[in-house]
Image (cartoon, rainbow, N blue to C red):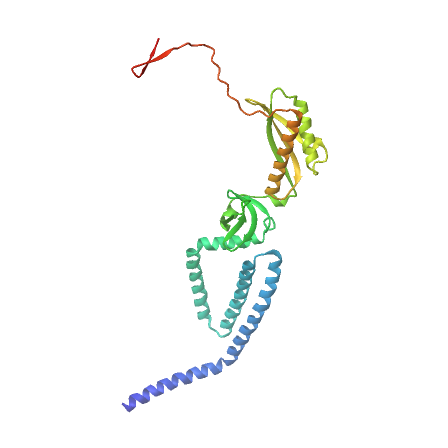
Length: 300
């Protein structure tokens, strides 16, 4: 029993002695590895703050700025960790970590494919100058003001004050019309006048009315006016003109004001805006006398 105890004691002491000698032999490398990690830790803090300041000038979403700075810090610390393991001659451990990170990244990527695609799409949208907060856009069947670009959704506020959350991936994969990229919009008005109307006078009066209503229209000739067809009850026309506007709501207001002004001008000038009329004409006169006999109709 004593002999077995001595053997176990010698084995444990030999292991501890070997570990101690290994630690002492690698103490300089350990100190260097610790110094490398500390240096890269402070480098990550400094660089992440610098990246945050630069990104915040381009991106107005705090969530995106935060995630970008964290990714930067983690990347720098990971580089420091790999260098520290290399200093300690732990190449096998380093290879194991890289392999495990690759497998884990693949599994996570497959599991969160939709979420990650929306996240990266949100980052891309945040750096696009063509789409910014406050712009009036139309996409995926919705139209409104851009109020938020998060890591998951593209949020717009419609004219009826309802919020619409659209996945960022859908914004990148579908067409997007941005009304705020230009300072002017063209207003289209379609109407019709009666066949008895003086067409030259209708054109002149319409152009003059719009010119008087909007300061942006310097002269009546700036209003484009075209007769388009002989309709069922009216001669139809199309007129269009430019206004200073950056949102669809302003365009709708301008169109409303134009329609009101044109209607008042036509009423004053006695110009008729007809509505569709259906006339039933009977050329043959039939005289049919019907009498009710025993609850039934009979013809005489």
